[in-house]
Amino acid sequence: MSLQVRQRVSLKAYNSFAVEASARLFAEAHDDDQVRQALAYAAGQGLPVLLLGGGSNLLLTADVEALVLRMASRGIRVIQDDGERVLIEAEAGEPWHPFVQWTLQRGLVGLENLSLIPGTVGAAPMQNIGAYGVELKDVFAGLTALDRRSGELREFTLADCGFAYRDSLFKREAGRWVILRVRFALSRTAPLHLDYGPVRQRLAEQGIDAPTAADVGRAICAIRSEKLPDPALLGNAGSFFKNPLVSAELAQRLRAAHADLVAYPQADGLVKLAAGWLIERAGWKGFREGDAGVHRLQALVLVNYGQASGQQLLALAQRIQADIAQRFAVALEIEPNVL
Ligand SMILES: Cc1cc2nc3c(=O)[nH]c(=O)nc-3n(C[C@H](O)[C@H](O)[C@H](O)COP(=O)(O)OP(=O)(O)OC[C@H]3O[C@@H](n4cnc5c(N)ncnc54)[C@H](O)[C@@H]3O)c2cc1C
Image (cartoon, rainbow, N blue to C red; front, side, top):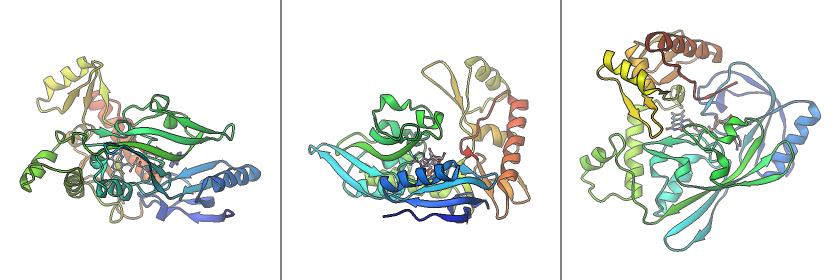
């Protein structure tokens, strides 16, 4: 099928912040061939290509002078099933949460803690999505990507991807790789991860003492719906800042000044602080200026109350960063991709 390219398309409906910005050119790729057509078309116009999944990890601060290519390829398939371990492959454009539900409906264990994360399968490896004690890398079995430099397909193993906390080779080499499809190693019997946050407690409240993966998925959906604003109702991109990693000395000094500091020692000696705690303690929770604000229940989430521009949201984020640096000597890093 040949690619349909449109001019000057509003991206408001294509980014979860619902920020107004337009794409010089816009197209949707339903298969590998259309991805190649789009790359060739953009090259012919002398324009870069910006890949887009669900737009839930983006902050658009200006019109995009590029061909915005929305990954719309669909397909989920079982590659291998030995009765215990099951290898699944999904196309980049598959919406993430329905994909997770597809696996849970088949009794597969592995993705339940990643329920209800917005976005697409193809973007999930970009920042090694994580939630409730599980990261994509824990169930990752490989992916196929197109190298925009050489035009060749490449297969990636877990070791190739350089996954880290909200990070990967694909994020570090932004603009080089088009992730086409991702493979997941799931299981019918793997142990569930129940020890993070209120998951176990929520299941106990429901009288579930021997939960299935689907039960865990449902509990996590319920917890997330209470804690996080729904982008369909209030524009946001989830956590706006990464949880910072600091030295043990700094964590100790902060703990001396703030007995209730939320801090998690890491295997490498560093300490992970809760960015949300720092922002809330600095008094930003519920702050609003114009239509840009900090969510009233979740200090880590910046929100667009309606007409905020990407520039206004970025300016607010920078004010928060400067304040946190001054108060706590901690550098907060922005999580979404700022364009
Ligand atoms: C309410 C809310 C809750 C969230 N909760 C979490 C959470 O718990 N954990 C978490 O990790 N994240 C969370 N996020 C962030 C976001 O959902 C994830 O990062 C998600 O994987 C982004 O997917 P997307 O398709 O929307 O990506 P986009 O925002 O469309 O793109 C993100 C980046 O990936 C690139 N990209 C997209 N598709 C491809 C592709 N196929 N190949 C190469 N590059 C590509 C884009 O160019 C861009 O740089 C949350 C966001 C929201 C709004």
